[in-house]
Length: 143
Image (tube, rainbow, N blue to C red; front, side, top):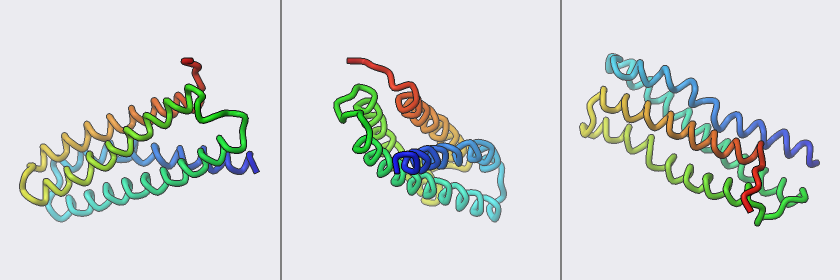
């Protein structure tokens, strides 16, 4: 059972970060896209963020089960750090993408500003996930 949970956990981690590498070139296309194509690009963006959210649910669930089935405890430094970074990533994910897209449709942001915001947010989110991935794989001991 542990091996299966680990497989699900690793697969959901890949699904949590992978789509954002596809979104990077998409943000550059958003900058100059015509209105008909822009709507399709933003729909792709929203679908990718939705996929990442659901993969994150599987990631958290399997992570909890893996901690429960393993010899690690909730007080282990890398587990605490991962949970802390995960909480930050949840807040960031909720505030980074959807409000920027809504702001564009509301006329607050120009197309160029939207592309810039989304591009920076994608890189920042990839960085946050990379830190979390490092904690889970390297399992550093801080205390």
